[in-house]
Image (cartoon, rainbow, N blue to C red; front, side, top):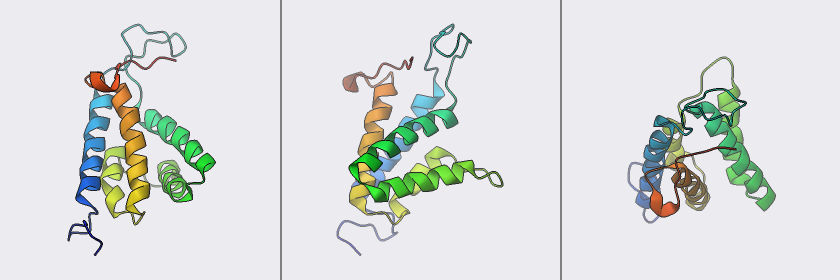
Length: 142
């Protein structure tokens, strides 16, 4: 067992805690409206909140492109597997929060998972209206 790993095989405690924070932050970000009532940024429709599934796909697609450009094939593979899982028509993909919580057990090296977690935390904190220290606006308009 590697130094810092928990006996249960969950991975380093710090990484497990970051993944838990990610899952909680995902719930916070997707549980409240990201658009004010009447926002017309989405084709002039009244859309008080974004679809969490679409939001996940957009964020992971952007991150995948960044990692591919940097040559981080392990993280690209992880995101490709999640996309394939989401696009499978015969079985529904597990919720994003559950997938996040499985990351420490994914077999990917801790440094790669840590990089992904750090990047995703930065993104989600920027969307969280309660996280003013990270510049969170709580408003996502294009």
